[in-house]
Image (cartoon, rainbow, N blue to C red; front, side, top):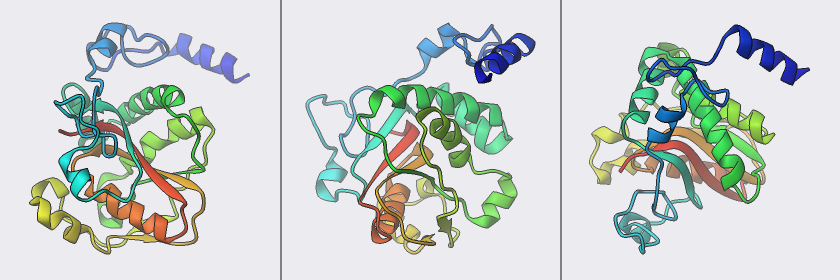
Length: 231
């Protein structure tokens, strides 16, 4: 029944590429040509996925000096054009169709890239003030299609952002962890392997702080799945 409904929907509302307007391919709002042009992440740090120029280097300098609390980060793309355009359209222009498309791309890739399935997906929470301003949490919107495709539990309520913080990208590296101290709160016990879902990893400090909170609440291990990794 679900396959029939999807086929009927595709006939009534054909997929259209969000980048060039051509017909979409493979059930996505993206044509085959534009999909090939997306900046897939190649070699990166084994811990935080930072793009590395030296393919033989396993960890970036920051992870060697101070390993983050999460075990690893999986990122499908580098934060470059046109992925940056798609994510900015989602976050600042309420283009929720971008979340559906990018979440579908992440889900298809993760279905092949993950050796084992985690017990829980947790989207990075927004502070209530920012959530009211934006009207949605982009991390949650990306996590929905991933949870459906991989058959995973998704909990957007177990973690709260209790302190509004300045954007990490605006701060020097030394101030980033201090900026996030006490920003998150886990409402109850957490168990098993937990995955944090977010749109972009810029410095890794947000994921690091949230991972520490989840581990303190009982998670056995934490990793991070993001759509794009900034260099």
